Picture: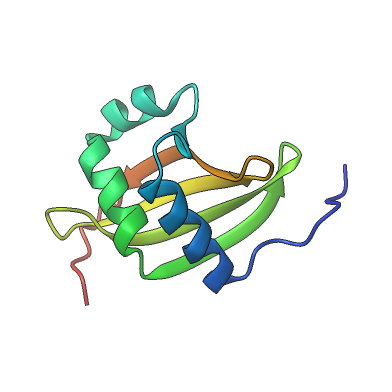
Length: 109
């Protein structure tokens, strides 16, 4: 299946994530996110912190019929983390698919 719309630009992605976090019900969690977080030793607080303070849009790919964005940034302990999100239109919302902390433990810049 080919995408019908182009991926969001980095500024648009930031805007959608910020709005989703500011409004209850617009930032949601995928079906397996809690299991993934526990497997990687990552808390919900860390996930939300990265979504608020991400520094790098590492990749954008079309997968499972939607655009997925991998963002990276420091968690609450300053360790480097990645979060994969999909953005769903109408109603616009951000869906956290997975998150993981890097084994190398990169510190913030």
